[in-house]
Length: 293
Image (cartoon, rainbow, N blue to C red; front, top):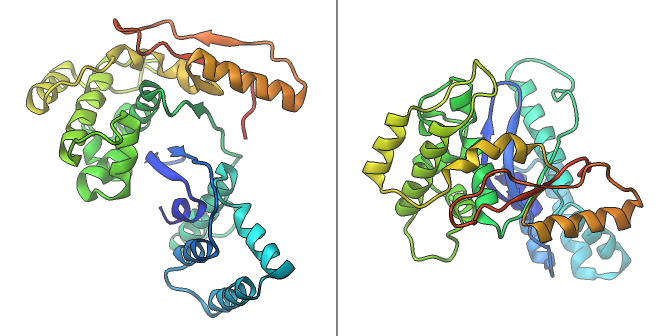
């Protein structure tokens, strides 16, 4: 959350597993960031600043006050890391590596390869809900828990136990931003969605666990059912292997941008989801074969 605040991105949910992690992040446009805000974000990274960090703050504050080329150079150095998914991931993995090495008496790199990413259409809330549910159900599929709220290192568990910023992330994933709905009501609806999808997910891996139908029914009866498309879970393997996910128009726009930027033509094009809910609200498309940054 510190790194997300610094980079100006929003963590919707996440799951930290034994040898990998998943995170769903919203990257809003960064516009008109003041010098005061840049300094605040820099301080967020260092709640217990070292003498070197304090010295850097003095230099930046003086430069911003004086203006000129030096101030602009300092400003651009920070702005390049704002609203940048690659910068967010790099900084987060670096900081996690430092923490992990310190606590396990080891040295060197921790991550074996660069992260992979999928673009998800934020305004198509069934797409963001599908990916958020897939992430929060990771510990269930791994057989680590029968209830995602009991797995300490996932976004849903954090939201239930501590609230805070992650609740707003799940609110966005569920598509209820701006609605007059309490956090408790939102989390109840998300729980119904999780258990509904967890009970209907396919077992691509014979060793993968899943939630029972009885558990999903009990959750629906106790928390109140929300009309959500349970069949989306069957598309999660399809969704997560795509490079772009969303409406047909959204995916086509990204394909066109990719072609204009690289001059490349993709062998595999836009593919529709094979499942749709009765109202057609999960009419999702995916673009495969495009490497995303």
